[in-house]
Amino acid sequence: MKRLNYFMLKDAKTEEDYKKVKSTVEKLDGVYKVDYEMDAEVIGVEYDDEKVSKEQIKAVVDKLGYTLIV
Image (tube, rainbow, N blue to C red; front, side, top):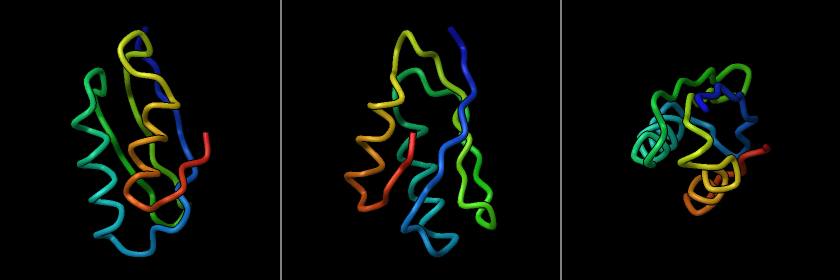
């Protein structure tokens, strides 16, 4: 089922940090769209929860060295 979730993104300081997270998450199978709001420290992910889970999204972001709060 298609879902839209907003996650708090910690440890990302610059626009480049957010772009790196966005491009990495967008590559996951089942992710349709990723947006971010730096001022609020939030990323929005539109995804198919039958193909990818919140935990899988968190795992790839954590591997980049950032903390995603699900």
